[in-house]
Length: 428
Image 1 (cartoon, helix red, strand yellow):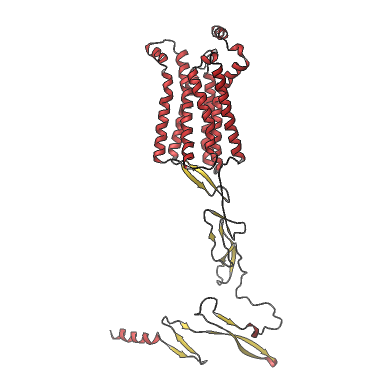
Image 2 (spheres, rainbow, N blue to C red):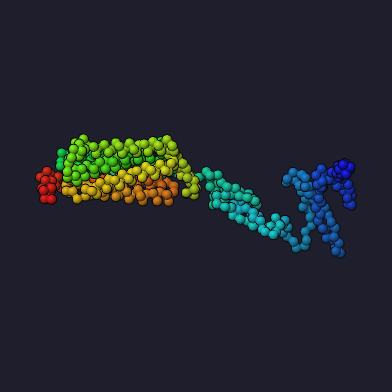
């Protein structure tokens, strides 16, 4: 206890120590026992006969605000004979904006390398220790000394890719509407009557809107268009594929079943295959409803795919729901292909099976190919790829199923008469 008391008293005196040094100047230690002193800057003046004299040319004050520590009368400095350059206090060149200081191992702090700032980082002052990363909405310029505002882009109608997709969508939609007009005008001919007119009209009307779907993918995205992109695509293609499936089932029931029973007669009379369309569409609506209720599509931005650009795109939301909807469509295409394959050897005049099987192969191939390309592509090219897949798969349905019939109706009318149909059937 005695020692602690004596030590405390001794520390009290040491904390407030001040004395005069050998040069006659007062030295003061502050409460932290740090020297509160000023330093003289001296210069050696050379006189004749080898005499030298120390001359005070300035003072350094370590405790004053930064930038005011040193006072120097440079006009009083006498330089050595033949010395023309100012002396340097560091052993490295200054690091200009765009670079940062990097310490050299085993050397003093004043010795360093100048290292280029990393990607998308800048330094806008000389001899900066660290680079500063640009915000996500900006990018570093070429010299990496300034952050520039990124350009917001999306798949616009003015873009060459957007213009091409728009032209294709409108052209194919008009072509499909023209095919519908042809079938309505020649509705009394055998080739139109033989292939279930109601289902044919439903399929053509649906394909007309399917070709217009890519227009939802072009232009500045918003929450409404993001939701409509996926739901409209899913529902329209479900109606189209279920119509093809209903036509396939109708053909199989009409020609493959050789022992008609009460159930088969009821199916044919009641037109049960037509109920395939609302049933399949209802299932797809349930999937879409679940998707939109749990994790709907939303507007997203991609700031990394293209340097200097922020790409506005629609995020699918739930990837599981998106792949489920697409998988359901592919399963319907596979089912339609199977039914068409079963009736591939039926009379050519009535037989749509070979054309429907080709259209389903095209549809299935397009969307199976789409998935790996979709996951390996970035930016607005993902949007363009999806719109292009919609156009190609719709064109496959239109071309394979309806182009051969339009050719006969418009250019081979002699084959579109009843006696030609009967003669061809009897010849088989």
